Image (tube, rainbow, N blue to C red; front, top):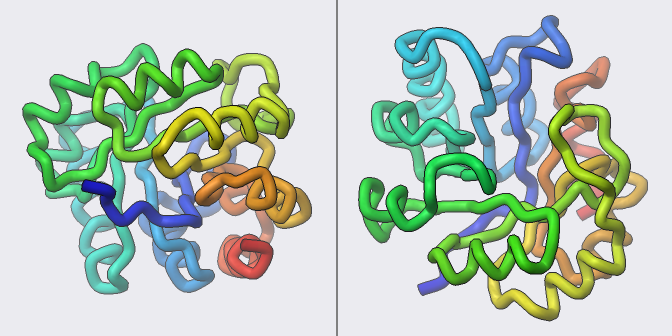
Length: 206
């Protein structure tokens, strides 16, 4: 069963910028047209993460926006998130499925066609593929895959492919022409002067 996967994913971040909290970024991005919010925080107290995630989930629910937690399946369960997004070294997708059940969305990260195939075989609902363009948001991002590999992944994998890594309002049309289902951004919204306007520009570009 193909689940409803959004097309404009915002990954909230408070490491690259400190002006806006996760909750504020959620509000601004929803106002700008994001249909999926992903809570991404790599460190800090679990209890605080759960509190923040619950606030974010409430905002998302009120606007009919999907709420996904990056990596932390415990936080996702505690906050009744709509799903999780798991990297290649994170919690294994098949185990996450056991814990979350069939109804929740599970996204997987891939930087190569082989990794995307692995996400598919393990039961992911969508694949976050990239970095498509050079990015400064993720220190652990691998070499840039580029638009041609993105096209190959779209052709090879029968799941919604969400392009990530250096995606901007300028290059979004190219990504969508390559067949991607949608885009995921961090700094293109979080690090902008006006995150709501930045989200709206990406929404228009889509």
